[in-house]
Image (cartoon, rainbow, N blue to C red):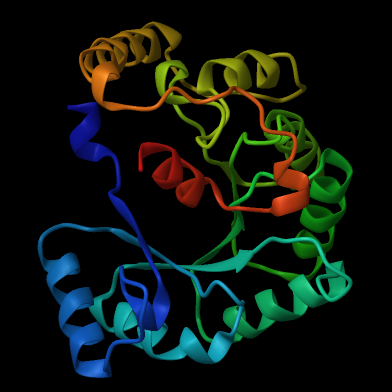
Length: 238
């Protein structure tokens, strides 16, 4: 029953849809309409270079379906990618009608201090809810989540313990325990249910161990090479 009430979400690569090349508008529209028709509730739309021009058409089509449109800023570190830069990209997307905004830290290089500063700045300029999605590759994601919560983040993405860490997200169990000690907190998450879900996926993953590459828990070199978590897991399996 609880699962039926949970919104379904997908990651849409803007004009790339779910591929690695640009597709024509009619294909993009057909994909979004069919995804909405079969039950997707939230479209998290991003462009890897934060080029808002590559988001405009998909934003328009998602809005036409009446589904939740979540814009995205892809986080990285460079002389160009300042707090002001990210706020500007977020404002452009808000002007196009997004319902919420996701900070997408694909490589897991968002530090706790940078997390606090970025979320704080966005909360001062952006009216829509803000969500943080970070990978645990560098080991900083849990701390970055805590600082984001202190800065006023609305939603954080986690994974159950058996599927968490490294190129995945921080464990939900850890964040529930941390948030429980914060003032005015109420996660309303039943850890017994989370334990049951985690144990289920642990059994599933155990059956697949012969076909998968074991991952190191921490890859601190990701701060240097900045390879996104999805690419790391694919490279390992290949």
